[in-house]
Image (cartoon, rainbow, N blue to C red; front, side, top):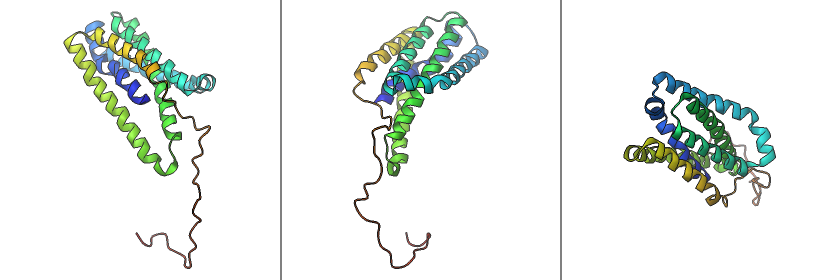
Length: 200
């Protein structure tokens, strides 16, 4: 639920960034590449300070702050007519993206017992990429039917509205979870040694 509530709306700037570079800021492929690079620089900067911030505010507040930052970036992308505004939006988007992505990834991993972790993370990744894909289609359609700025504004409003709606879905930090096997059944007693490659 938390992944859907973020990636569905954060996908708007990924999907619409080429249009911002080409039509709103009147740039070309070079500007688009620089905007992508600025998102990456923001993500690297965010990753450096992320552990200290998470230790202070906790996982849930960090994701909420990342959602607010994403909404701010979307608003800036919507009003961007000069490269400086687009670069500021890209940097904020990168910081916010890594804050939410890393926190959700860690929460998904610690919430799952070892025996089901692979399947659980596969389901989480499916939801993450599915929400991003669905959001890209949705915001692209809004942009084509109305305008690119309106699509950014609508995505920003939805991202902010999702914060209180998803508050009850708490993120796992692994502090209180005991995922050790119960050992309810004793280990089987074997009369003969069994080779590692024997049997199904």
